[in-house]
Length: 154
Image (cartoon, rainbow, N blue to C red; front, side, top):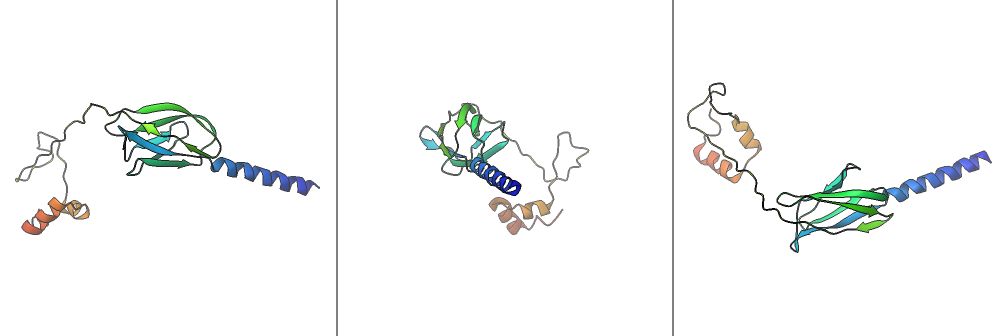
């Protein structure tokens, strides 16, 4: 009789765990009616999140039911934080982000044709060996390397 009770307890406890892991949230992130690709969608208190695809769509699975705070961020958009009640099963929530007028700081890359010692340079210097460019090719660097054959020389 005790074995039967233990078996029933185990059966119901695994059913509860399965029900919790089947809870999901899906939706689409847009701005001005257009999808926002590669936006971060997640719950900070759960330490769970995903990135939207090229169409701005996302799907989070294995969520616990209850009240949570949804956070959505993307470069060039105002961060959105909103409370969201997650129910058991499939939940749908579309998010609309507002574009920001703030711009990123510019990046300046400069170089010299003459060798410069890192220690003697008046400005911070990053040194990239030719191996770096071979492992991380871009059309510009690859073409220059093939034409001038300068990538293999120091």
